[in-house]
Image: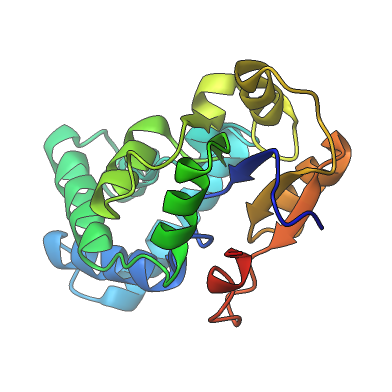
Amino acid sequence: MPTQPTAILLDIDNTVYAYAPCHEAGLRAAFAASDFSDEAEFRVNYNLAREQAKHAIADTGAAHCRLLYFKRLLENRLGHTALTETLILYKAYWDGYHAAMQLDPGVRECLQHWQNSGIPTAWITDFTTEQQLRKLQTLNIANLVTYLFTAEEVGAVKPDPRGVDEALARFGIAPSLNIWFIGDDTKRDRGVAEACGLTFLWRDRNDADFWHNLLP
């Protein structure tokens, strides 16, 4: 692995922060904002609505959209679209989620080092554009990476290479093993890295020193 890559592509969720506690905080906040009296029942209904939405729009950025999950949840429960209630649950979820977000140790130092070294960087993410912009603002790293490309805008989720292709086209460079792809998903992130001929760095959530170890 080169000590000084020519470019770096990065996943966001569960790569630069821990996803699970944020999602858990979001669900608790959404339940508190709902008219469900039983949290277990709320979660069963949420998971059902999530699976229904993902089945209908699989392999797209919209498949991750919480607004669609809550819309379907309430339609299943009430038999009609509940506009105001859907937006209330959606806002509550994301307010709770963002309140729990914490940047992993060493991420900021790595991003700052790569920026100072003139190494082009890009986020390649399967989530929706609005929420990824918000997450980067919450984590206070919005200005440390050159580009953001979401599945919503390129039209496909990883391991489809369209996000990577777009990033490298903007950088004006060809794929090579001197380009790092950093991500937590051994199917999607590793898959797109290997398909494009890049070096994959797995963000093992059990490795507390992962980011610090990338610094020279």
